Amino acid sequence: MTTAPLRLIFMGTPDFAATILKSLLAGPDQVVAVVTQPDKAKGRGKKVMPPPVKVLAESMDIPVLQPVKIKTEEFRNGLLSYRPDLMVVAAYGRILPQPLLDLAPLGAINVHGSLLPKYRGAAPIQWSVINGEPETGISILQMDAGMDTGDVLLKAKIPMKPEETAGSLFEKLAVLGGETVLKGIKGIKEGSLIPVPQDHYQATAAPMLKKDDGLVDWTRDAKEVDCLIRGMDPWPSAYCFLDTTRLRLFRPQVVEMDVNAPPGTMLRADRQGILVACGKNALLIREIQPEGGKRMPVEAFLCGHPLAAGTYLGR
Image (cartoon, rainbow, N blue to C red; front, side):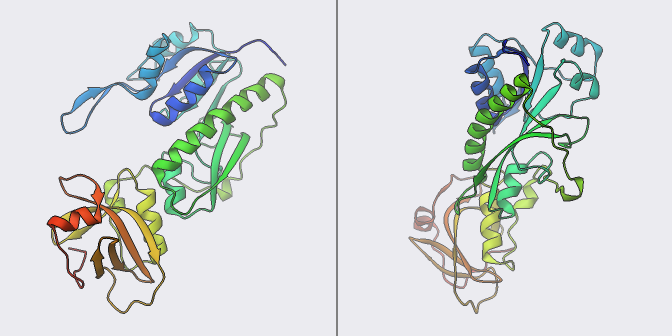
């Protein structure tokens, strides 16, 4: 048991991780260094951009490391020079080798965006929405060399709201993750946490999403399509085709009704949205993004692209 501030090394990359880092910086312990992914070219202009974690760390004058390779003695020795007591990892983007996990006396803990052992992998938040989970949350786990397989130290749950998107859930879980990791570190210092081994037989995978995963299959239940669209929002986004034009779909709403038209048939298109027949019930699409265009309400899209009932949304 200790009451002294711990020396922390934080490893993370996207906005989710930056929110958690912000919580650590407001906490009682000291973040002595930050490790994040190298800067990457983004957008149509391919402008090289720093990760959000780097931007925050530099604004607080915290040393930032961006190794291309993490399995080197040079990198490990560089981390050792900061004399860390504990490493905290959140959405860093790489699996850490055992020599790094053993670097700090208290090991390494991970802030994971699911209730483990469900949704191990790179996209737990998106898959929990896609699969229509009634609740989700944060797990703080003691890291081992596997993919999110370590003992769980702490969990925090939140209910899944009917119109939750992956984007809105990211924001909520990032805040919850920051609050929960502070409790976890406090418990580690007090020696009050009991590591709970995961039931590996109950584990499910949450692999990285691909753009092709967003293609809508209208033969599915409208509720399943609804979950897919929300789980793909904002990236990589769900889509269908109007002839050969790709349409990205947002803000769905299930409409329970008897449908006689083939799945994928547009039942109506008006200021409320585009109502599409599904394998069971129908789905109202309220926002759309045409290929090469901006995301907009369906009403705005229809001003320049009138659509008739009976149109098929597919190739």
